[in-house]
Amino acid sequence: MKIVLLDAATLGEDIDLGVFETFGDVTLYDKTASDERIERCKEADIVITNKVVIDKTVMDACAHLKLICVAATGMNNVDLAYAESKGIEVKNVSGYSTDSVVQHTFAMLFYLMEKLPYYDDYVKSKSWSRSGIFTCIDRPFHELRGRQWGIVGLGAIGKAVAKAAEAFGATVVYTSTSGKNDDPLYPRMELETLLSTSHIVSIHAPLNERTENLLDLPQLRRLQKGAILLNLGRGGIVNESALVQVMNEKEIYAGLDVVEKEPLPEDSPLFDVAHPDRLLVTPHIAWTSIEARERLVAGIVRNIEVFLKKHTI
Image (cartoon, rainbow, N blue to C red; front, side, top):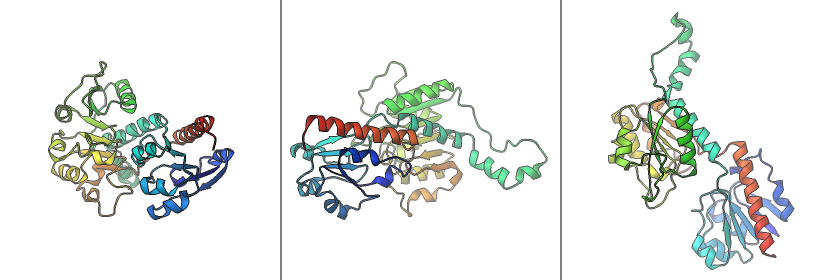
């Protein structure tokens, strides 16, 4: 059996990928460009991909392909309908990154909420050493207790964030991006109300036709002064040009782990924020704790094992 992993670099050199060798002949590529996909996949029985797109063109060129393993939860990089028509199974891994994403959500929050960029620079520039006083309160910050935390997308990750936020004493509210979610544990609000009344807004929703450009200029302008917006869902949910415009109009803080185009283009409007200390951007790492990536690889292995029990290649 031939197994091809198209973007091994996204899983990290610190994770053992040798486990796939128990299933057959494995070829690893750190990354794969669009024009390299067919050549690399054409003899494969199983293709493992994180973000490399597997579409009709690739599937038609791969006569042996029987299983596509997506090294992620979202499967928007695979033409699922066409795979089904070709009899090609597609398997993802869910739940592996919840703890990691929740942790990163709070890391971003406290970095912004407690004005840590300023205080870190204050010490390292030796301003504190020269101050003659034991403390510094130039940039006041609030406690999380008593703040309203609005969650956009109350799925597994959103619920885990809500539970942690409550442990800090925050009041949790949410909005349903599908309009169908009705969780009795938390008050449900329309998006407009949630944005205008929440001190913290975190996004944990998938990108689809209902959420694309969900937070556009009119919606972002509803954020109150001093609000913190965190996007750990998908980049296309927040209009980045509009976000920069609003951040330049009033005191708004934003933490983004996902952006519209990844990696972030050098001409992105996010580089034009007037107050860079109010913006934190991380390179889509919320899901990448060592433990989460270990769980992800284990999930792929299980998917292959289950497939092989049902099929003989």
